[in-house]
Length: 404
Image 1 (cartoon, one colour):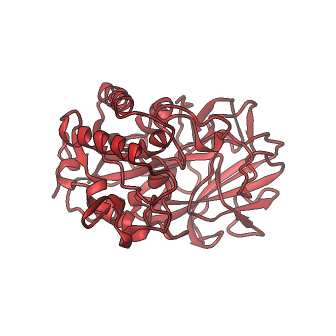
Image 2 (cartoon, rainbow, N blue to C red):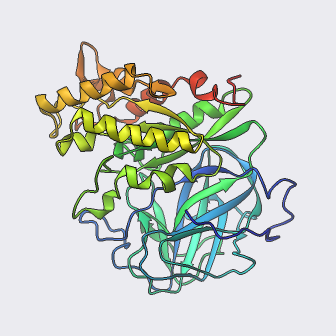
């Protein structure tokens, strides 16, 4: 990821001491190329003209200052941004009074993001509570062409005509996707030693959880880590619905490029990243991947993370018997791969998601209490169980981070 140099802006007040250092990712969304999505009203395929997107984002950790990462990662033309802001959410598309902070980019309220690039705003002083919700607004004069976006969010977002980027409220309508924004960093308290990235597919991205409720498994993990006494970590969700580890899904760009292609941008480039939890492979199994191929792909991920000094915790693939994707042959691949995750010793830690969500007496199927109904994606109770399966002691043991 290329980051344009960051300057300190005084919009919204004087920045606290240390705001020029110590950034940690508090929220992120893995971007995909703009395209038409057959069952979605997201306008990322056709693009926008003279419109404001108001993204609703749940931050895992709080802080005294924030900066926002704009994305044109998959754009084929320069992205002109006329104005942008960040605010604490009041309700709906309305900001909490007194919290709107106009963003600048090298001191300017407008900026052009080159094709294939991402860039951070200048920092702004804003008190943000952990496990709270922000509104990140971006006005584009347009026409934008296809928009780099995150299509599946389990979160309602907003869209308005004209420039409402700095407004407390306005005439916003619903839109399902996150657009133009791929991250929010904070300057956290000293107890937050870095970030853990949840790297996966739809089961990490949204599963079949309740919308607008922040019940993805990384959200439940964020709540657990926020409750830790002493040193802890923020949580970043780098899940992508439909994503595969080994290959792109031809003709379906909204599922993103293969995880092996996006690991540098979506995991290793996150501010303050200390660890990653992987949960990938079920979609590859559906496309005929072997256990040996999944092992080889995960070894690539492990090598890339280790080279960057990032700890890797391997997740076992959840059971999915009864789903449209299940066959006895695919079940054998899942079990062989999961055995390798559990016993190989190649990870810094193991998260046994499969054991945590399996039906009593039937390790090939989801527990009915955790099954959203498709026998593949867990419900709210299932994602809570997944987060509970993470050994916080093992996760926090690396380096200077210690469970309190």
